[in-house]
Each structure stands twice: as C-alpha cells, then as structure tokens.
Length: 208
Ligand SMILES: Nc1ncnc2c1ncn2[C@@H]1O[C@H](COP(=O)(O)OP(=O)(O)O)[C@@H](O)[C@H]1O
Ligand SMILES: [Mg+2]
Image 1: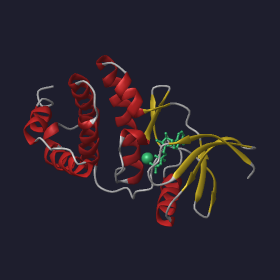
Image 2 (image 1 turned 90 degrees about the vertical axis):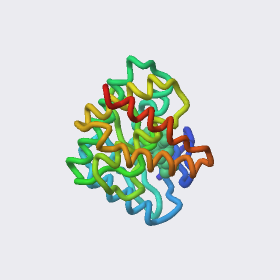
Image 3 (image 1 turned 45 degrees about the horizontal axis):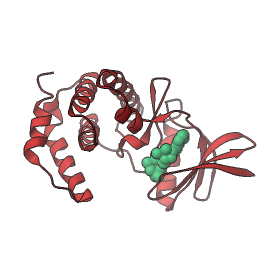
C-alpha cells in the first residue's frame, strides 16, 4: 500500500506510526514478534463493534488499523483536574465492562498509554498481550498504574474511587492484587516500594 508517514508514536517493542494511505489516515503497527501480531489481530476481531480500532489490512507482521483521533488516557489523567476524574474513570470502566461482557476475561496490559479518550469515550488500542483474568485483577492493575503516576494524590484518589464505584466493587476486592502489582511495578522500574503509604492510599478508597 502506497503510504506516507505522518507521525511516529512511542513504543518499546514495536514500530507504530500514523500513515497517510489511499484509504485515509491509518495506524501502522509493525510487530516485533509474530505471536503478538496474531494475538492482537485475533483480539481486534473478537472485539469488533466495541470501542477499538478496526483492522483495515493485515500482512506478515503488520496491522493497519483505524486511527482513533483523541488523547491518551494518560495525558487526560495527568492534565485534567480532580473534578474531571469521575467522568474519566467512568469512561474507562465502561470500556472495561464492555470488553469483559464480550470476552469473559479482562484486558491485561492496561497502562494509561493503551487507551485513547475521544469525545468523552474511552477506546482500547493495545491487545498484543493475551487477555486473561477477571475484572478485579484488571482494576487492581489500573489502580497500580494510577498510583505510580506522578500527579496530585487527590486526583489519584478521585479517579480510583470512581473507577471502583463504576465497576461495582469495593477496594477490598482488589486490595491484595493491587499491593502485589504495585510492588511488581516498583521492582521492574527499580524504585522503592513503600508498602505503608501504598496501604494508606488503598485504605483511603474504602470510606469513599
Ligand atoms: N488506533 C490508534 N489510534 C491512535 N493512536 C494509536 C492507535 N494505536 C496506537 N496508537 C498510538 O501508538 C502508541 C503505541 O501503540 P500501542 O498499540 O500501545 O503499541 P505498543 O505499546 O506495543 O508499542 C499508543 O500509545 C498511541 O499513542
Ligand atoms: Mg501500548
């Protein structure tokens, strides 16, 4: 397909760019390994109709998918105020719930860079890791990422409390998994895991 590269996105493992083709603006994702390519292609097929990109073309190790023109959930989370957190968290919960209803499992790789917010709706964009586990595990991971982002504590609390409420369970349901995930992320990022302040944060979500 004749194409012109318009933009290149941050990616650790793959090559992801925005390209202009005769079929319009598309995201071209060149996968480093075949397994991830197959997993993502399969997921996107199974998720058809939900808020995810549509596969326009698939070749060897490359997916051409529709471009979701919005902002990364991470940027929205970091740049918006506390008062905007409930709405943001609810749009993320709506996506996770729709995913779970369709697949019977939850998405695995849920960093805030793997979601795009467009017109107040949250879209999932990265499915190269096999989906597995329940809603609680997914929310524990989301809370883990949220907790470690560098922003005001009240924003994190507002976001996580609204997320739990929209998902329909309390922090108790995710407490141990969240602690475990945060400690794993700290180890991976080579930062000190402070169990006490993590506990204070999680317990702070109880009374809300
Ligand atoms: N369909 C899409 N629409 C808009 N932006 C996208 C889309 N797919 C990927 N991106 C951008 O590219 C980045 C990396 O893509 P992603 O699918 O998460 O791959 P990976 O994490 O494996 O590198 C995303 O964080 C996002 O900024
Ligand atoms: Mg990603």
